[in-house]
Image 1 (cartoon, helix red, strand yellow):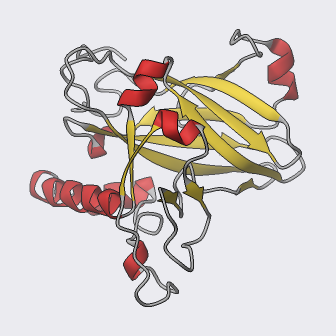
Image 2: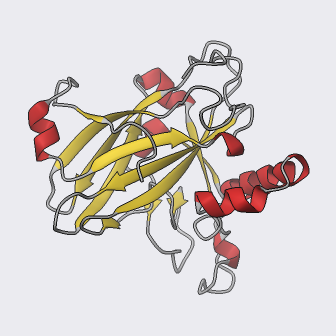
Length: 237
């Protein structure tokens, strides 16, 4: 069920907090998907678990990689760039891995990553070109987030389907949902290894929560990752 170790809830000062943990309605975990990794790209799967007896709706999600500098250096592909990343990774994996179809099924990809221009039910002619959005920009609510493809092409980044930024996310009582993000990092030799992030989210009741999650796993536990090979030591998270 969980993607990895459950995250640690933080107080307003960014410190682990028992009170924040008790107030939280969700358990959050994450892990990188090594099968989808490449030199400049990583996919992170998130699991949102709802142990309560009520539906929990997430209305807003932002990610913080630990500093303003890192948040300016981390990009999230959207639209056609996200489609093109998937297609290129699929072609590579078809060549390298015969069971790619099984990997895609396990990850739940496809439905949440189909091009808006060709998605069922999208009006003819509606097309979102795509691009890159930094973590810093998304923290300022620069993106359009929707659980369904938009009826008209909006201005700026848009995320939909199973993307983590496609809100609202409704988590059934006693169950869980899985979401993903694709991260694009430059080849800057000064960029440190990314292995932890802070998920900030707002619920329908307007309560805000922050949880720190570790998403890297040791090589061999879920396969070896190619992402950030120049920054992340091999054989450790």
